[in-house]
Image (cartoon, rainbow, N blue to C red; front, side):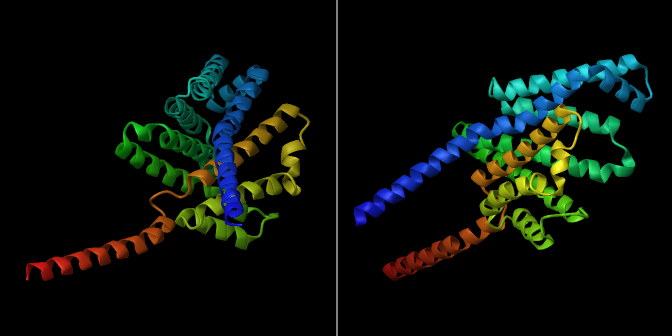
Length: 283
């Protein structure tokens, strides 16, 4: 009986490691699909997009064509760096540069809050992707430096991903209850049961975007390419939370603090016990 139980535990652990490796291998492609679809949509409607950007910037059309080509090439090069060459740090930096330039040029400052809220999920998914790369590769070469970098990226990505709950709370028609959104928001910001909260959010997102009135944001368009672009954004959001569910909240979280408290007390007790024995031996 004991042997069967041990074999069952080992089988569960093996399955967990397989799922973990599958998630860490597939999720970068889910996140990058959003940027690939953005480039594809730009190339399919290159003239229209270029003219629209020129009108917004109030410049000649040629500058709109130049900027659109630059943005598409920058994004394509970044995706190639991440998926083909495995240089996530370089690729993520290029994507962030492109996003900052785009927001500085085309954001209506009256609605800057909503623009930043929409960008927070995409940027945070990239930060968590970069934290995964640091956690899996760089920590073997530079343990202390890579660990600090990973913890900082996890903190920034975790807080940024929590913006999805703020957008849910602001929706007039919201299929997700406010109490659940507040609970998940608190869990991610404070780092309480972060893995479970990330798993739950990855399951709730399809319900919110597909099995709810928001269904028409995916398929209620005459342009199939636009629907696919929204679908890739859905996959990008799910991918970010799946990565967070594997990495956890990190060092700067309430979970880590609570788990270290008993260890600290035990170490202090052991230190006092050793000190007492040493004093008695000296006497």
